[in-house]
Image 1 (cartoon, rainbow, N blue to C red):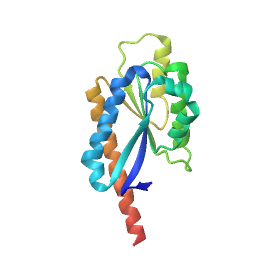
Image 2: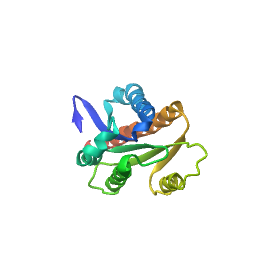
Image 3: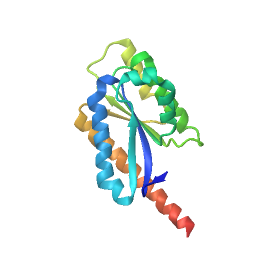
Image 4: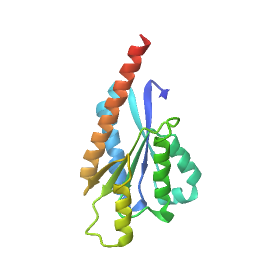
Length: 174
């Protein structure tokens, strides 16, 4: 979508409320990628997402529509799916969108915070489900700084892909 001279690409960021620092780190990494790599080429990665868990509980349909309108989906997890497992539903909406050629979703990326030595069977099962989900890119991190570096690299790759697609489209027009 083109507005104000920038080619805008929406990234939906999801993560349960206890990962607020990590969500902030993701938004910061996207801002860095915009400033250093995207904006000089008239590209803007636009962050969308929830500021608090109550929004996913109270506005499920709106959240799902925001996911459907996004090109990229970043999911941050540690040990659970969040309230009423609603982040699980949002995650699977993103996967469905990615698998539907009519939808704008290009990629689903999961950042999984290293849990302490975990023995709770529900948490172990949750982490195994994520690790076995086909077609996602999964990163593990320990600190917000490590997460920032990983997200920054993912965003850099997306900007390179967008630039390449734009260049190829320009060649086709000539």
